[in-house]
Amino acid sequence: MKIYIAGKIAGDKRYRAKFREAAKSLEAMGHVVLNPATLPDGLNDRDYMQIALAMLNAADVAVFLPDYQESKGAMVEWAYCQRIGKDCALYMDVAGGGRL
Image (cartoon, rainbow, N blue to C red; front, top):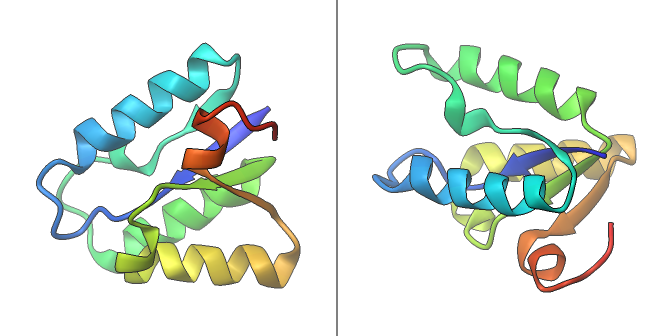
């Protein structure tokens, strides 16, 4: 299954490590992970959001990290998923043995 990871990036100095840990966990379960935290520095917010939404569209499901509600971008992703009917899950549920 292709999984997009959503969570707080802006203002979180540890975001790359946090997303990397989540990606490793999901990959260990056999999933293909689309990780926006791997995008290069230097793009503007609009560029990041356009790329993130393209990644999200390619995914089968979006998995939201615990801090997603602290992120304007992740909240846009959440609302977008709700609007188009994209399957969503909370990372803690999936990492705790829940099924996708």
